[in-house]
Image 1 (cartoon, rainbow, N blue to C red):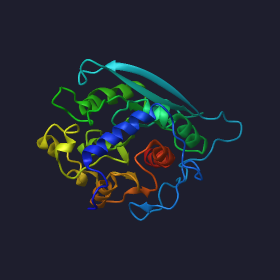
Image 2: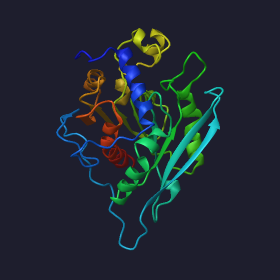
Image 3: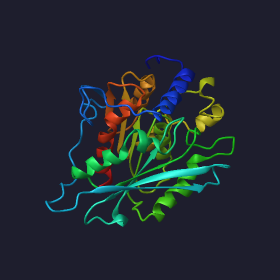
Image 4: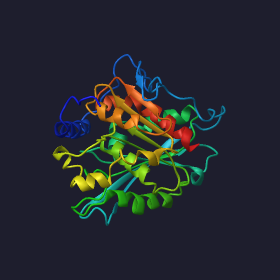
Length: 307
């Protein structure tokens, strides 16, 4: 495996700083690129990077009301996150002739130093989803929930955001009238690790696809990961490298920027994944501009798998 450009502790600190700073000001996609279309890239499976995929359905007929997106926000008290409210957001397409109980859902997991609103306030998911629907994409809802800096698994401080997702938030989404028989996962950085872990554990019966953007994945444990894992044993219990065979039958997409210090680890992880992997390694860093660039292609991937 290539040597990383920064030591892992510094890399995790920078990742948290980038996400925290991004909540103060939104970045624009790099000049000279259209939304959703990247330049030449090194694909994870020899592909061409985040080029928009064909729509999974046809645009609405003339005279049909244009699709729109409504957003609901709320919170609940989780027994797995003591002494804090757990806030969540849900973007639901409103499409003529499409009933909500037939609408699948994709759950987004955020990175460190962030919360459920990062996807909405900084990456502009409402506008991206609206464009996807206008192009005839299969409607699906997008949900996001707070997880703190817990790395989406049980910790010795009493938090267990993995169980919060499975035992509380997924049932909450079912109460919104959505079709949980078609479920997708996507996330970035810490959340990219989280969705790969959750998908590997096989605890969501209707899971159809997983997409990880710049996932913070590591092949071995050292003290630089003490904020992410409580011990070497905790790391081993949540080792996404060891769990890769579990993802063999699942459609998957993984992206990482070529200037991202996580790139060597992500390449190593992807190299050992069974089956086809969409996505690739495109110009960009561990930053909001890169995630905004690839988000339309990630939505297209999820829509095709949830159709």
